[in-house]
Length: 295
Image (cartoon, rainbow, N blue to C red; front, side, top):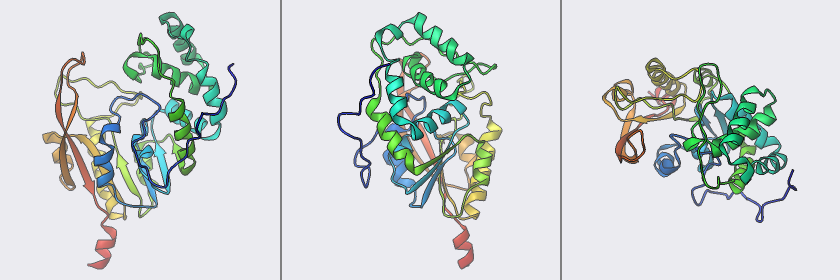
């Protein structure tokens, strides 16, 4: 195991986030490029709640006093909790996996097999980062048996995100992490909370495929239920923002919200060669409880 070395410059959380901070994980559908637009629409609050935190770009680039961060992916949340409470040990041990001898197909497949057989949360957290950075395109995918099955990525030298890990670990001191259903997160909301929802997006076409990073998946019924929960939450004094693809169907389920659409550049073909603009929809449900009291 390599010596545990502090970063050259200690990572300090500024009073306000001055520049965008990247997540330490590669993540399909991550919101790093949309942080500015999302931040403009989120209201001030004592706490930001994210039922679908993913790689945490919104968390990392906003400045709320407290955060409640949730995801249905148990491996993701276990990693975040480990980094929150044991950052020095975790970063030192994770660094030892980012060496040339581990960046081969045989090594990757052996470590992926080890990950799928492990039950120890700390060891799984270490390998989760390794698999994320060495696997194909940063995908996080499980088969129906719950086994991680992303193929080897064949990258020349996978990046070890040391500074990003330290930054996340320090800011995580403001956060409470949970691995619950999105329905349970909405049940636990407090009046005055700001809520940002980044669910798995609705497919843009009937032929578009979605690969779930959790066995449970996320159906069209879930999409509609999330919109209903947002309407109910605003009646309890919460401000809710949901992002999704801008389609006729999403506009229908979000018809009670204030809608904003922006064009976003991203890959629109399976092989990644075709890139174009797709419309991103933001549905904002402002808190209504106070308004009702004043009527």
